Length: 243
Image 1 (cartoon, rainbow, N blue to C red):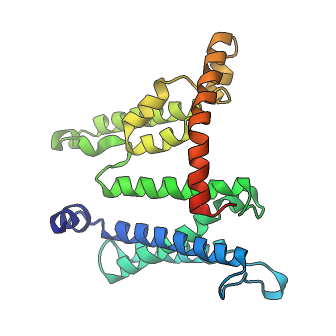
Image 2: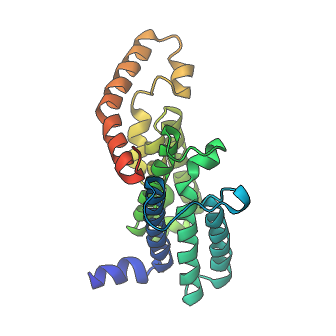
Image 3: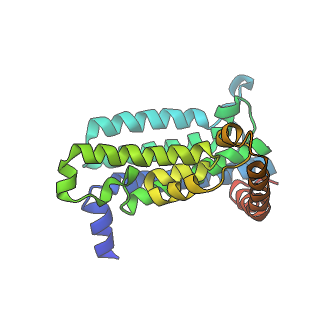
């Protein structure tokens, strides 16, 4: 365990990222517990409403994120300042993304169906940071040799190719595969070669005069949603506290 910690966290300078991720998860969990208690009318916590104005926790989250971000830029990669800034930034990001749906809809949808987007965004963000901590680098350029790293053209072509594959998966309606595929290219490639979802831009453009492809896409999408939507909903209910 000690060797893994030094090899993957301390030695490559990933400790600030690890601290930020830890603070991000902790702040999300803590604020979800507090909001559940407020909703249930339990405990000492209440909504902050000075002068009748409801202050959502995205507000202190933005302040912490801005402060932690500027602090990290000013502190560099190492030292107590960098570590403290990472914790502040992670805690602020957790508060902000917990109300991502409110920012998206510009309306308090925290406990509604639309509010589930906040939980999904938090889970995807945490997963991506975990991948970075595990050794993945964006666009799959971490496997290049020393000679290949010196060849900027090869690196640029590799980045561009993986970006296009992720973009193709996105146009086919595979949002999660596209996002994860930025860090793990095979995931985006799998989404790119699969049949597009019927409501995706790709399907509207290329399946318009292909009724058989549209029908097959609809059957596959319905089958996939029937299999996984209930699972995602239960997970979201458990994490987000939806009733």
